[in-house]
Amino acid sequence: MEVQGLDATVTILPPEHADEPAMVQVTASTMAQALWHTTDTVSFPVTEVGDISVTEPTNWLEGSVTLQRRSGTVHALTVRFAPGQADAARVLAAALAGDGTVPEQPPRGTFIAVAVSSDDPDWTVIKSVEAVQVTDGEVGEVTQFTAAQLEDFCDFAGENLLIADPAFYHFSVLARAMAAAKMTPPSGPLLCAMAMARHAGADSAHLSADQTAAPPPSTATEVAARVLAAASRWERIDTPTEYGFQPGRFVGDGTIHHVQWAPVAPGEAEPPRPQVTKSRPGRWESVSTPDEIPETNPHADPASPLYGHSVTLTGDFSPWEKGDLWARIAAAGGAIGKNVTKKTTLLVIGAWATITSKEKRARQLIADGQPITLWTMNQLLEALGLDGSPQPSLLDQPPF
Image (cartoon, rainbow, N blue to C red; front, side, top):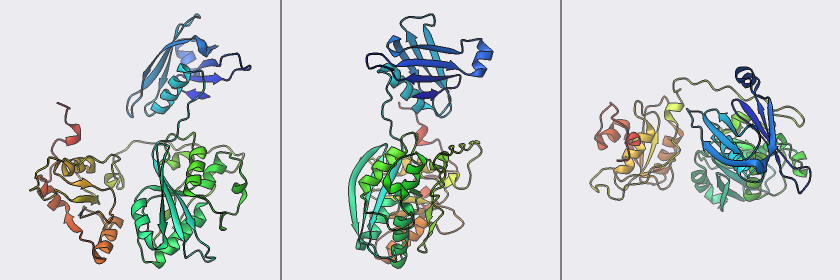
């Protein structure tokens, strides 16, 4: 195992013999050697590691792992980590505290593994769809949808990352079936488990199959397992572009758009990760959906116009942040929904140049008889007792 810090690289080498401990090797970076005239490499058995202290890096601040050695000329070693490297710091600390083995660290984030069953040579009629949600490596219960329940599958999928194996076949069948039923497809990104496995260097007979042909039957649970194995070195499953993958999308006309099947051929080097430049929020960032859904206040005033509603927001609510509006809606007795589903009773529509996919979905459900109320941003602000100028966020209030 090897962990790269800001000023040093820590390598834990497996023992050559079963009765020997693993070895820890700390190599200072070239800049650290020049600045601090430090020894370029320090090696010692993992059994010499004593106390370990960890300061986890945040998204803005550096962190560090400091270990005390029980013997040797260098009694304390500190490895600094850059902002955003919390996972690397935790993995290193866990390995040093144990026997030098690396604990299994599944990628964080949520995805839904999908497996479509169809015997239609034209890829238009499906028999069923299997789906299983995986969050932070935890595989949930399998949900089965029949052809008549495609709309329920869309609700289940929402805006989540969808992964199939291979993506081209499964998502093409889904796209054509949904287009034939005049349904709005899920709006989340699409990824290919086969491409991920090839990229990770996995050795499996199914990887040699033609991606544009109907594959052998596969369950959603099997797809989830392949994804977790292929992404074992990923920090997050929902940031595929950092690992050279360009996700695709359902277009809505029975086709899918640009799922990059094989970003790296076997034997080639992994493409460099893009450099992230911080800038002011862009058009899409201003309407992005927050990660955490606040809990509904059970003691809210029943007289509130939001009380008892299942509320979803769509569009741009600048200068208000969606997370803050969510918190205020939940405090007023509303239940927050990320997507428009059969549970939605209120959709609040913010500014946007065109009709959003959530508004399209809501209007389709209204046409089908579901009672959904459509509000403007101003109606929401009035219900919350707000004006156009943001007040101090509920998310930033001190805990006292």
